[in-house]
Image (cartoon, rainbow, N blue to C red):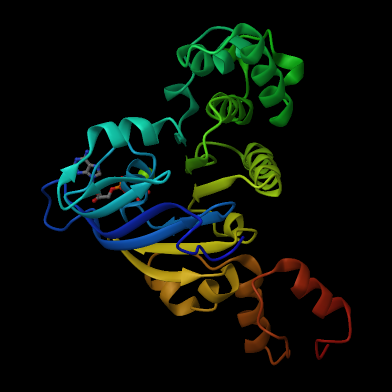
Length: 287
Ligand SMILES: Nc1ncnc2c1ncn2[C@@H]1O[C@H](COP(=O)(O)OP(=O)(O)OP(=O)(O)O)[C@@H](O)[C@H]1O
Ligand SMILES: [Mg+2]
């Protein structure tokens, strides 16, 4: 896990540019790898290009220029779009949208998870097995017969994730899955992401909640369509001034470190709240 190497990249973008015809491109010369088993978190202010990147990584959109390799296939390059390559790659790629209502298509929870595998033409026993497994994974196994419209926002989003996972994608892209949820709903999504990561799944998680990036292997910050910062959460969040200049907040622990330092309390900088708590409760801080 961690940094992607040439052999294990599930997705590779090289000098990718995409414009919708506006004054500047939505993505501008983006080069990025997603390694197998990696949890990559993408941060950026409104309009920085996150959803456009999600569309490219999930094979739904091709760029104007650059090279794109997805699920082991070169799908876009100098020769333009490889339609067959895109069709094949898309079978291994899953996208979860910001609004689960865009993704829920049936009137029974279990049917919704079965919808994708049914379209793949899988045998009935295999579909049943996948539905059970994914509902359990997202803690909705008690609600298999429920009406999706009656679920809470967090439950709906977990249902959308289960439906995507039932297709067994090798890469799952989540585009701000917690944006419409309350704190509890967001926490339940983070539990699912953490468990997927522990199970070795490859995840691209787009969020504008900085705290949600702390557990990721790697963080990329987009600013006006360009990769402005990239590294481990600690590396990226140590650039506090830049983070703020991009219209983003620093994580709580990083802000607290700055505030403590301003009051003459000696703490080692960290963006990890547990580390900060250990320092303050232990002998590390000059309190
Ligand atoms: N279909 C479209 N047509 C025209 N312009 C678009 C389209 N989709 C996105 N854009 C523009 O491209 C830029 C990047 O948009 P994108 O949706 O990728 O950003 P984002 O980081 O996902 O934003 P948000 O935080 O609001 O979800 C923005 O300037 C946006 O206005
Ligand atoms: Mg978006």
